[in-house]
Length: 159
Image (cartoon, rainbow, N blue to C red):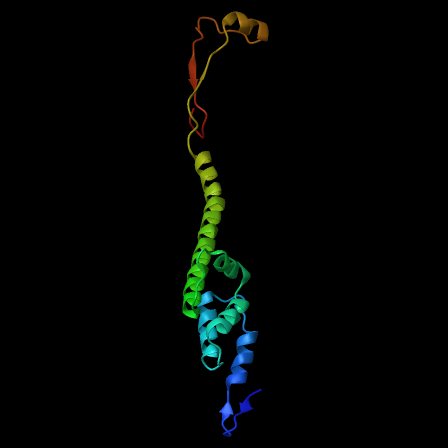
């Protein structure tokens, strides 16, 4: 795919153009994509608007969309590199933060549940039924013992 110039020299420009046109970000970070794109762009003969268009074409859709929706579009290829890299870095950090929160919620939920079960239960005040009601429910009052409000402790091993 290389060409030989009129002077008989080997010309890498067509090879770099094809390489540039085939290039896509894919699963790489924007920083990695920019580095590879710069290497291919050096000897492609592209500059200005055509170079920017090739760069945009190979970018992942989410970053390209964010940049295209921006109030002030980048005007130079260097600005496109910088802003795309920053957006990608922010997006990556956002995803890491979401993952940390998700893991914390899942792990924290189990931890909170375990903590709750190991803590003693709060005091519960129960009013005992008056003697007249106990007789109708079938429980016989103990003679000589007065029934009063008592504290009932619900918990493991305490009571």
